[in-house]
Structure formats: structure tokens, C-alpha cells
Image (cartoon, rainbow, N blue to C red; front, side, top):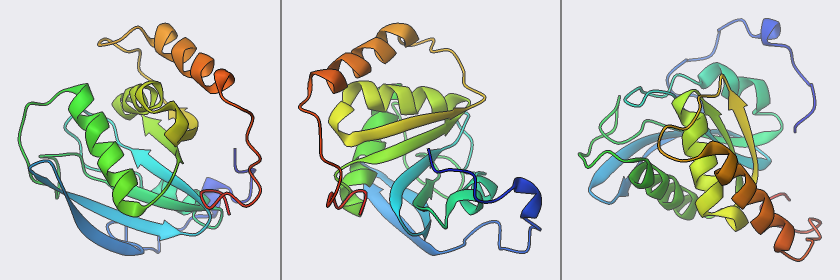
Length: 173
């Protein structure tokens, strides 16, 4: 997706693991979500595992922040974020969509780890025109939706769209 620029072995851990770049709290549907943004380029959001875990994906953000504008967040009621239930996959997907809108991206790449991979897939299924791509790290199989059907639905919707000329697109410029 981004090409191999840096090896994970090159990272010495000298950066602040909690808050590199811009940190802000974003209000979404009765919650305040902690977020951190770093880098420049293609918009990417890193979705942590759990459910119920805070964002621990700073080392991943560091691997691509010279190629991408990387957003991290703590899901509602996790880590540095506030908010309450109901805790459903759809509500977490809605939170992701509100974050995308808040940051002003027409579309973005979602990278999910473990349960975060399920959120990335569900987001892509429900927002195919807002999804430039998906990457999984230690993917989990969906227990709330048929993963193959979701993947198939996403690809079908994307293939039905008119092919895009990506040059000049502010999401990838």
C-alpha cells in the first residue's frame, strides 16, 4: 500500500509513545474521543483491538508517518476517551465516520488490529465510497457479520462505481 520505506528495527523508541503530533479530543454522539494525528500524505486511521482497549498503535504510526497522515484514537469509554453504551459494532463504525468527517477527509485507508480489523471491514462495508483501502494486522473473524459477505459487498459496490481518476483528489494529494 505505501511501499517499504523503513524497517520496524529502525525505530529506537525515542518518540513519546503517547502523543506524537497533534492531540485533540473530538466530541461524537455523547462521547469525547482522544485522538492523535501525525505525518503527512494519504489519510489513514489506525483501529485498535479489543473491544475495550486503548490505542497502542503508535509504533505502527511511526512506520508510515512519512507517507501518510496517520490518525489514532481511543474508542469510546476506553483509555483517554469518555462515553457510554450501547457498545455495538455499528456505534463504533458511526464513531469512525464522525471522526473522518471531523478531519475533513473525503475518504481514507483503515488499518485495523485484531478487533480493529472487524471495525475496518464493517466501516468499508457500510461506507464503501469513503474507503480507499483496508489493511489488517492479526485479523479476527467477524462474529457479528459474515466476513466474506461483507468483503464481497464492499468489492461489488466499489466495482460498480465509475473508475476514478485519483490525480488531484484532495484525499490523496
